[in-house]
Length: 321
Image (cartoon, rainbow, N blue to C red):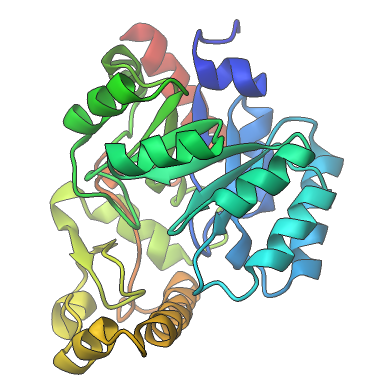
């Protein structure tokens, strides 16, 4: 297959313009390796690893088993206590790209450039996009309202054209894409590539529980709700009976602490770490009394397949559209 004409394919030397999105406690080496072999790329959250030694081993495993490009997602705000160590390890191991989230990417961009590593920055509006472009980012990832996980406030229908108007660097779209036809429509809208995550949760290579995978098959876009309970930042989850029971908003004490200037930094870090533990329990639990992250694109998940089968279906639909 000839590479699809897109900036993402040109930048990374891949054949199909898809980044398997970094999903906390879902993305792993096995998924990324299979994605690369199928002609796409992917990224793993650095926080999926307990320490930087495990992160280094994972990077080396991917490089040993495949020759394609892959990236690491870094949380670059103060809630990530391992940030500087993770950045150093990724640079030493010479990954192909970073995806930065939830903070200023300035330090990451400066260091990555010394190692020839590209930096793609998550953005939710034009102001931040212009800032990161000014800092030297190689591309922006438009985190749309339709995205899974930490979604933005604006629909891709408005955000992609707005970013294309103000940015000279490539714009990749993240959110609401679950089919090859959707990829084509996004590129026709102006996107230079796409980031897709939720449709890969229910794959054979995915390390999450069978119940989590079946939830992605069973539930649909109308079952996705936003919660602030996991990390303090709005996050999309499947509206299971358990989520309905515990609610989706922070309580009065959480809100008060989150607004206190002196306590805000530490509370956000605590909330984030506590949320991580909740997600970890959810990802590997065998009960529906858990919290499972996913986006509206689970609408297009109808069975548990291999990563290769998912990608091949996307390609087929893309070229048929």
